[in-house]
Image (cartoon, rainbow, N blue to C red; front, side, top):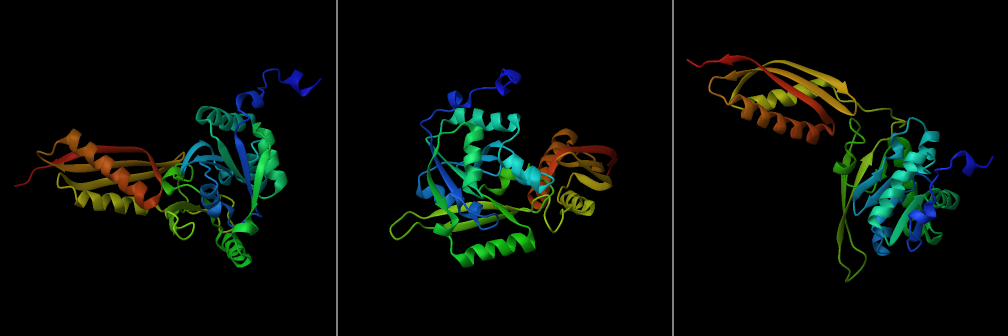
Length: 292
């Protein structure tokens, strides 16, 4: 029995994705700075779409996929980056059908890898390949590799706020670079996000509960209507944190509007300072303080 007989509903990807897409490849060994230079290569070739480590990126925005760097092992990372699973593959295919890109840049560690991605996604053949040695010096590649091995850092060519949800709880460093293509050419700012994969040599980074408590207590001091904090509880909750807080308010304080405003401000401040998502935040008013 053939594969087609076993999976009769398997879609013909070549019919879903139009052949007019021009496919470019950007190839280089792992840790040599491909993702760091991806936007530069794409910009020089007027490409708005990039596929890198399981993500489909359009103009600095993740529009489909989930980063392979979240995978628990290196083997799973490779499988994810190649779109082996049908649901991962179809998510990218549907996005390509929706946005109809004229061209796309695919990043990979070898010619074979990018060709495999092209085949799995049903894309046309690669028309042009750029190698990392064409855009980076040997010294730059060695530096990038050293940072990857010693610090466990990896660059994804999208801004921090776009991947924060996927990497909640890990160290995120926004990186802005002012670049120019040459004399007389319009300069541009390229923003990237540095993350540590879950299998990083340095292990996972966590944030103490005390950090959340201190942020909330500081914001309470800045909120005249809340007299004091009675209790704070912080729990790990899926892809972020679950916060519970009991407070005493000042008599005359508008409970509903005031507490909602405090929660919104606290949520934004915590997510900005810790890069952790606040999945749930409950504030309970336990007492009322009446000034003399």
